[in-house]
Length: 148
Image (cartoon, rainbow, N blue to C red; front, side):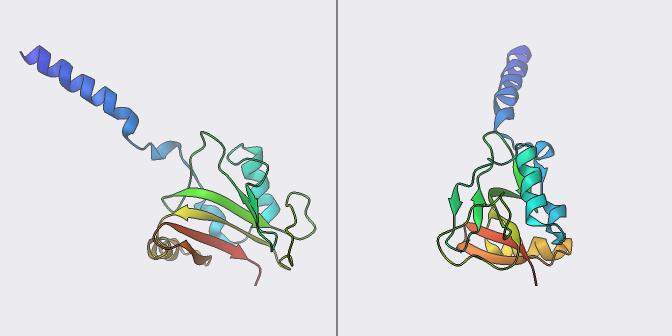
C-alpha cells in the first residue's frame, strides 16, 4: 500500500514538473532598462543570441519595429513575460522604415504581458526611469527607453 502511494505521488510530481515555470532559464532584460543602451546594441544583441527573430513582425508608421521572441526563447523583464521587443534608430539598417514620418530620436523597449500598474511598480522598485505605456489595458504594457 505504501509503495503504491509512493509510486502515485512520484508519478504525479514528475508529470506536473513540466507545468511549473522555470524562471532560472529565462533571459531577463531588466538591466538594459537603465536606458543607457542604443537601440542597435539592444536589438542586435538579442538577434545575435537568437532570443528574437531577426525580421520584425510589424513596423509601425513611425518606423518603430516590433520583433517577436524566437520560438523556444524565454525572455522576461521585471518578472513579466516579454510579448515583443521594440526599437528604432534613424539611419540604422537593422530597422525597417515605416510608411509615415519616422521618429527623430532613438527608441527601444519591450511589450510585456502584464497590466501597466504592476509594470510601473516593478520599474520604480528597480530604479529604472523608462516610460510605461499601456498597449492593451490589463493585458499588454510597453516599457520604453527613448532619447530625451
